[in-house]
Length: 273
Image (cartoon, rainbow, N blue to C red):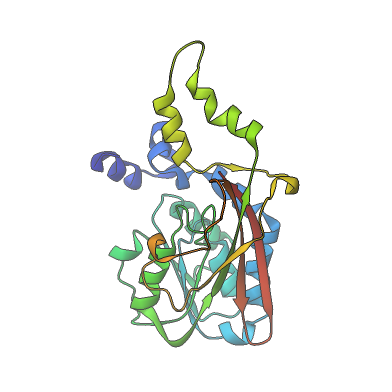
């Protein structure tokens, strides 16, 4: 992406953006946020983790990292937060300010447009950090490093993070028919050899549904405590080696929200090949 194109997308009002602008600022389009908001299991788990722990949020300063439409910020405000600061890099922040004002929460919530790493808050510390930072397979294209940066810069000692723990399960799977369709197909495309693309396809994770019958190993557990992480580096994560030919992998992750009165959990199943 060229810097000028990135800057152009950031400066445009969402109502003025074209399809080309949305390409460079995909999170400015309402569609991706609609998909996330309609994931009721995920969204209601975040809401319950705050509403059932109002004693934690009461009169506290909260930071929402990657605030999007402002849904988590509004949950935090309704849970009793003294003030919520939401940081959002995409142009959807323009709409989130309107949404927050329409719900009469603009006196409690402040949306700041920009990158977390380039933002200065009007406060030195926050009591709680909330964020929906997870990507596919938990870490793929996630905001975890940004959340870690915010934690180290602003979270007060003894502060809370929602969620605060993540658990990743990995199993090996075998699906030869699917592999022929998605991978080996490139070896003969209408009589032409496109193997060079196959090699790239082998490196690209795919998100799909896997039949339990295709699982060929027990699960391997990788547990991550967000409080203890510094900068996430996949090289520092090790799992047990499988004693057979290389297989495709299936990943399932769970998130924990640990409050003093309510423990909530959320689970997502992503099939990466």
